[in-house]
Picture (tube, each protein chain N blue to C red):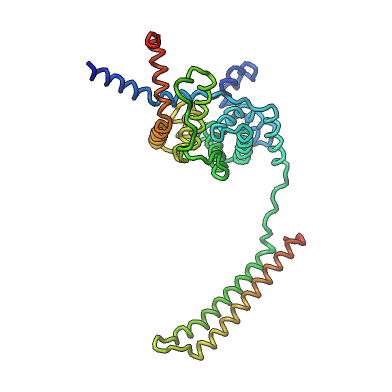
Length: 136
Length: 217
């Protein structure tokens, strides 16, 4: 008898377990929008609708610059690899000191890197100046 | 399932042109007008869905001002994305899914609560259960605790109860399979039950008290 009662209580508990949570979470007062909400949404929609379309990126003007930059960077990378590879090949594990050829190549590579840096700086500077003047 | 706006619209259907009665038809008519360049037609959509969207946002953040801001942002996104609605699902499903995305991403940036579930306030004891104010506070504690649930469980709970306990609707809004939503709901309930053991006991007492009034005497 007691066993039956316990089982019944367990069953009831299992059934009721989610009910308390459900009761609380399902019964919630409905918020009423404030009086100005609709007007405020429509105002923002109108603002957005009447706003001028974003200025498209000036591809026609930018393409020569992009091509030039690609040539400069591509050439620079090519030169860098061309000078650095022989120096790497000349390196030997048995040779503890750096060869003169490697020193020479490294110096050339440094010059190439410097040239690339100057090119990048001048490109960024011109872009910034053009942006300020409203050309881009 | 019916949303508050739909209920309202159904009551007010007699004032509309006879050929358009259902809210879905009105939405479609307004959308067609908006896409044709009539900005004013969007007002009908906002009017119909402002209540549901604000209430949905409220369940995400439990902050009235923020709920309105979130709902406004959702309407703006809907305005921008309206041409992308392909009519594969109902407008309400599309709008709720879009709004859920807005609310989710905003709350990721600025969480509504940063309290772990373990630190959520425990409801007061059974002695004060008969006090209406205490009961209200208890309920509010549980509702706030939902926001402290781990993210993966929180959103299914919010949307399940927002959609009047309709798992399919919640799953459509969150864009997850129904089985996943059910599993997460179950886990979320387990976490809440573990956090609020007294709540279940109080509920049980209340149920027994209601079912067997003689027991209290």
